[in-house]
Image (cartoon, rainbow, N blue to C red; front, side, top):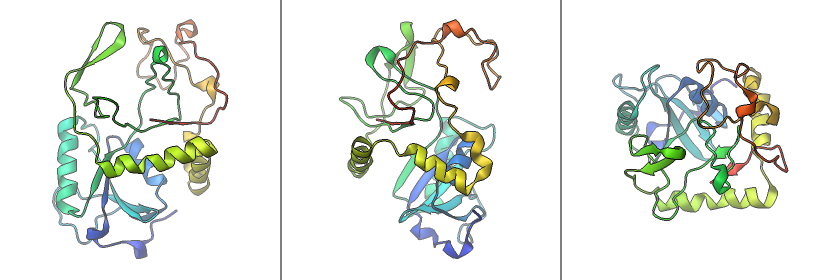
Length: 240
């Protein structure tokens, strides 16, 4: 679906910022917008800083997606991109970090995250819901010891998560339907399809892969995969 310039809104109407670290994440993020307004410079944005945003909307929310420069990662660069976005889109009320992640289950405690699941970080107990990468260290047994914390998300967002959780619990996962809609709009993205349980191999945390740069793990030892119970449904799920 090509951008529709007639939908482009004044910069004051883009109230949600969305930051991706990778171009791959940017592609997927742009694909879930209901409509893309523009992926070029907004005419009201000055020619300084990072001002190449994907502008669009989901429902009644106008969104600006920014991506870190290629091969320039880290929390400092992300903070700079966030500051630049907030300086040019000053009506931004909420800023998200959205991206893909490795499979991060904790099978011993019943946390079973699999490929295709959508993970939303929420506070629990004394934990704010977000662990910055340099505010924790891995100890023996792959246990994470938190050495710092970030602020909790705004109460407005914590209230908002109740609705999709209610729908998910009552009607089941709709994630596969959303993905099917994306494939219908953008046939080039069919490569992002779920591979099924046979393509979701979780290796033991202590196992060293034969080729870390390979996109597949055909050369790895299949006997070193973690044993997981089959799910009742193969549909991706929402994990909080």
